[in-house]
Length: 238
Image (cartoon, rainbow, N blue to C red; front, side, top):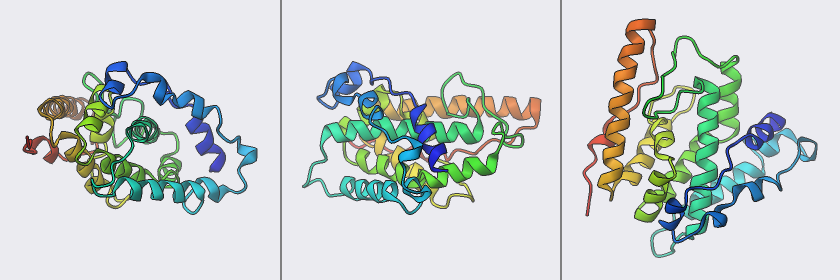
């Protein structure tokens, strides 16, 4: 599993975020050069044991430490560069894990076809769930939510960098991963809290998904992951 996780991480899209997204955090694209960090990754043979990349290893400990750090009250401001790195790398990993389980068109992007839940596109659904668990999917989603909390700058970065559809795609109940829906809704709520533009984008994504879900259900008998639509009802505070 450790080798598979490292291979998954190596295949992520490490393209720099758009310049306008970086400017929302007071940064430049080169400040969030994930490719430079990815070049320093461990090779599978360098991982001391399978747990190191899973539920009990250093990856988990570092991730949980980041979750706690990002949850510190506003009196201790979270570094903008670190926020940008998390909202770039973590969102990409969330996207890869979601597609591994539900297919390449599973993310709630406008114009994307939706997969059938009854006919998983993953050749090994059990392995996809294990990968999500080993990669601490729920904790990664919680980290994004904490980074976005009361941070209009981080929320604007997320919207402009294209990360909003990925977070929205995790607002569904999953018996395999308790609290996924709650953590996903919390993340999207924080992203939309102070932004009418972001809330409008959520409504467009949900409307598109509803239409395509109905179309697929009629033509294929498909049953898709039901995304919680509560984020679209959030009242923007100014």
